[in-house]
Amino acid sequence: MLTLRRLQLLIVALLAMALLAACGGGGTADVPTAAPEPTAKPTLTPRPTAKPKPTAEPTEEPTAEPTEEPTAEPEPTAAAGDKLLDVEVGDLKTFTPDNKLFTIDAPANWTLKDNSKPTEAIVTWTDEHENAFMQVDIFEQEKKQTGPELAEFLKNYLEKTFGSQADFEQEDAKESGPSQLIVWTYTGEGTGGVKAKLLANSFIKQIDNKVSLFTLVVPEEQFDRLQPDLDKVLGSYSIDSSVALNAGSSADGCAGGATGDVEIGDLSTYSYKTGLFTIDVPQNWHTQDTSKSGEAILVWCAPQSDALVAVDIFQQPENQTADQLTKLLQTYLKNTFGSEQDFNLEDPKTQTDGSVLIVWSYVDKTHDGLKVLGNSFIEQHGDKGSILTTVLPSEQFDTLKPDTNKIINSYKIDASSDLP
Figure 1 (tube, rainbow, N blue to C red):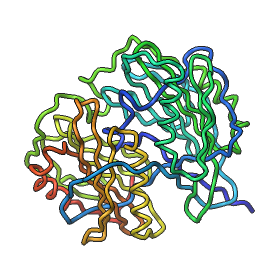
Figure 2 (tube, rainbow, N blue to C red):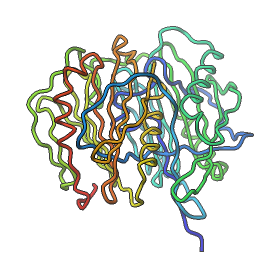
Figure 3 (tube, one colour):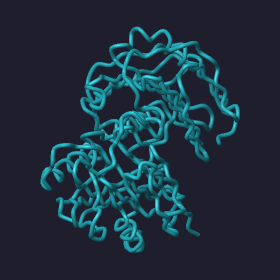
Figure 4 (cartoon, one colour):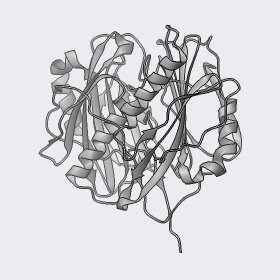
């Protein structure tokens, strides 16, 4: 009897971390809005993307300051069995964000995540088994790019983001309606050493001052069956270039607002509704809860938008070694921030409580070249994995370090409590 398996997909702009990371102004591209050609099947060996599962939790040890640059990109996780669960594209439902920037007919049975920033629209849909996803990423670029320039940008973006993945290959860019299309593939390895192949179509184009990247990723073995439905989705995608991406407003509540000195007010204890974790957070910061079934995801954002604290806890039934947790965190950070300017990932440091710390940084082009410094801790408690992250302006790190250490050291997980 065949055992069905799930292939966990690594989505490019992820949840809490994606609130500060993205292509912004120079990171992604777009898809056709008029007369698009059908999705294409590659002549290469396809390969899957996977969804990084954060695993960790810090408690002690002070945060550290970084030193240099980025290293690499995302890595997939698959599951065990002999046959992937089928991706199902159900009835299509038109999605339009509140600002009317774009519209698309998306599968009604897929899960939507909106990680948009004030200067960038980032919306992702994932099928129910996490074996396929599609993503829209739109940002502004005043300088008009030629087709070859857009193709080169997309090529470099894919290479930087996915180039470290096993069997990664991308075909030469070709015109597809008003877009440049690159078909790319890679092999993902999941739990138990199971390998699977994913096939992706990424379209990039510019309409006036809007650049958009549209990507569809599905298991290679299911591409032919899904192609008619995927072409309907692709053909429905349109952009209204007259809509401004306003840095003064934000769908996620974590980006936007004036820059300035980050203020950490009095701390108060936050307790998750199921008792899963507690953490002391600044009373003057606002909370974003994007938890979903099987995963608790919360972010606390400073009013100035230049700082945050993020908690991500998920199910991790298999016991992970320190090396496995480290690799997972590295992959997660590279996948999420690897395309940012001057992204830098330091060597991991094991803490006295058993968690692993990675210090990372990048330059935020949307905030006048502000250098951002992140501390991410990963660790496992029983069958729960967790990542705790703090993000601060680098120049304020030393000043804020005593307060951020109080936040980090207050974080506690009750592994016996339920996930959402």
